[in-house]
Length: 543
Image (cartoon, rainbow, N blue to C red; front, side, top):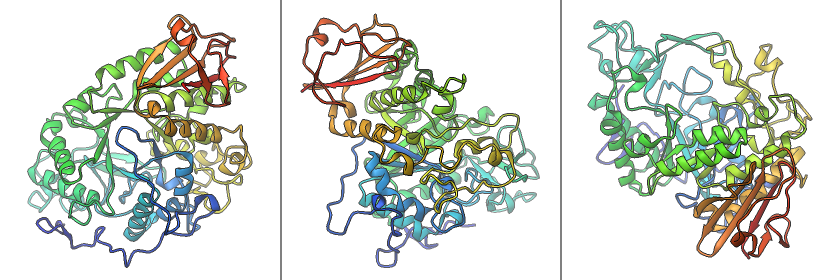
C-alpha cells in the first residue's frame, strides 16, 4: 500500500475527499419539516467560537437510517441536522467512520476510507457541507494507535519482516508471525461471534508519523489549500496515551508523535481543535499540557454529577478548574458511548418516581456549568441503558448504542435497529415502541425532557456568562443546594438546584439575596431565597 497523495501539491490522487461542488450530490430530503436545511438565500449561521461549543456525540451506526437497511448512515444524519441545530447544538462529534471488522468502527482496516454501510465519500462530503451550512462544526473520532484484522499493514506483513509496511506495526517475534496485541489479548470477540485480531502500531517509526500527519491533514484540509473547505473542524483522539498500553514499546508519544502533528494541523487550519480522551479517565492535566490537546473530558466531574452530590460536585469542579491551563478546556458530560445512560443510573436503586426531576437537575448543572457541554445522542430524550456484564465481547456495549428514538414505533422507517435478532442485546433491549422516549412523543410536550434540554441550551446561547463567564459556588452552608453563579461583566446567571430530599431555601449571602433577579425560565421578578422543592431547579438572571 502506498500513500496516494502528492504532499507538495496536496492532490488526493486516490480520490479521498477531492470532490468538487459540481459533482457532489445535494443533501437528501429531510424526513420532517423540522429537519429542513436552510434555503439557498438564507444566511449561513456562524460557527460557534472555540470555548463556546455544545457537542452532540453521534454513534453513527445507531443514529438514523436512510435506505432501509436499519444501519445508521451519513445521509440519515444529514437529514437530521435541522433537529440538532434547533436543539441548540453547535458541534457534532462522530464515532469513527473508517471501515473496521468491529461494528463500532474502532480498529480500522483503512484510515482513508468511509465504512460502506455509512455511505460513500460523496455522502460524507455532502454531510460536511450541509453541517457547515447549518452553522455546525464537525469532529471526527480517530483511533490510529491500532489496526484491525484485514488492514494491509497487518495482512501483508505476517511472516514477512521485509514487507514494505512490516515495520509500521509492533511484533512479538523477529519473524513477524505474532503482532503485538491490543492490551494482552491477541483476538477480541465481536458481537457476531468472530474473534478478531487487533495489532499495535509502532508510533515511534518516522514513516508512521509521516503517514498519519498526511492522513489527518487530508481529513482536515482535503483541498490542500489551507481553506478547510469540506474539512472537519477537529479530532477526538481516542485512548490517547504517552506510553501506549503501558508496554514501553511506543513511548514519549506526547512530545514526539502527537504534539508535532497537532502543531501541523493548527498551522494549516488555525482554530482547529483537538479533543483528547485521556486514557486514565482522570483530570487530564498531562494531556492538556504535555500532550497539547485543546480539551479533555471531565471524567471526575461526570462522576460527581451522576451522583448528584453537592459536595462532590463542588470539589470536582474546583479541582477541574485548578488543573486546566488558560486557553484549554474541559468537556462536561453525563454519558457517552462507553458509559451507562444517565437515566438508568438514576433509576438503579429501583426508585423511578423522582428520576425525571433528577434528570432535569443533572442536565441543568451539566449544561450551565463552566466548560463545554456534550450530549450523547438520545440523552435529551432520557434513553436508558446499562452495560452488559460477564463478557469481553463488544456486545457488552450494544445497550449503550441502541437506535436513536425518532419515532414512537421502534420499527418505523429511519430507526437504526441494526442489532435486531434473537440475542439478549435485542430481546432484553431498553427501547420499546410507545415508551414515551422518542422525539415524536416528546416534541410537542412542553414538559418533556427534550424541551427541557432545548430551553437550557437556548439560555446558554442567549447569556454570554453561561458560555464563557467566570464561575463560583455560593451558599456553602446550605447542604444539598447547589448555588452556581456565572458572571461576565455585569451579566449574571444564578443556578439554584436542590439536590436534597426535602424542600429547602438557599443560604445566599446578603449581596446576592438583596439583588434583583429575574426568573429566566418562568419570567417575572423572584426572591432568590424562596425554598425550593426537592430536586427543583431555579435559574435566575440579572435584568
